[in-house]
Image 1 (cartoon, rainbow, N blue to C red):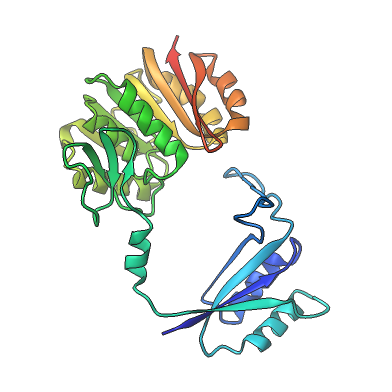
Image 2 (image 1 turned 90 degrees about the vertical axis):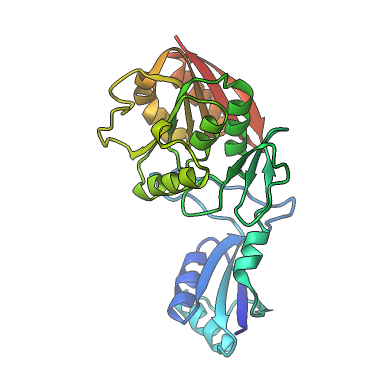
Length: 305
């Protein structure tokens, strides 16, 4: 079954109203994006969880997907009325043919090389180097596929710095990718913690997929009272937390308590212009430095004082 993709250029005042109106008028899905995306005029915007929604792009577009037999002219007119526009906005149409969407989605995610010996490989691909350390991981509901710069920075640090035999805490484990990588790189024990039960379930599934030793692997939700709850004991030789700047700042006292004296902490999910603020917070307990930058994202590392 083919579909019609309707794209309307609007402004930051009416974008959400138009999007909601199109859903009410039968759109299967809608999204709002920067009309200048992919050009030198692209306007990058970032928000932190828990903060009030900020501005949207100054020249946004609304794209909505409709069945092929939808009356697009009437839909645009009705959406314009809902947004109290004086006239229907200009729009363009793209016809979307029926395709194998699963195969197309999979084609977007190929193997990712982290280093000469470390790869992230989806289940539908052959490992490019069977002799390498291959993390078998599919894109899913939990964050962490190895494609994001912050995840790559953390994986590269683990690859370069783990000596073997460490106890590792992955706080905000998402898909479990960092904990699984640490175990495959020689860690003695890995513990993944997340506030999202779905992420914990995904981490356990991915650990099983990677044939991780269950006696050395533990995933649980935050504040579950597990024996390795980071709020209760200093046990970790290495702590990795790939989250976002604001949560990392709030988590500093908890992560500090989990670290053994002389232990390492690795923080990412931090934009470059946020790095100094995060560094200063952790500097109270760790000797911190910016250890890497990739595509606007920073990696902070430190040693427990």
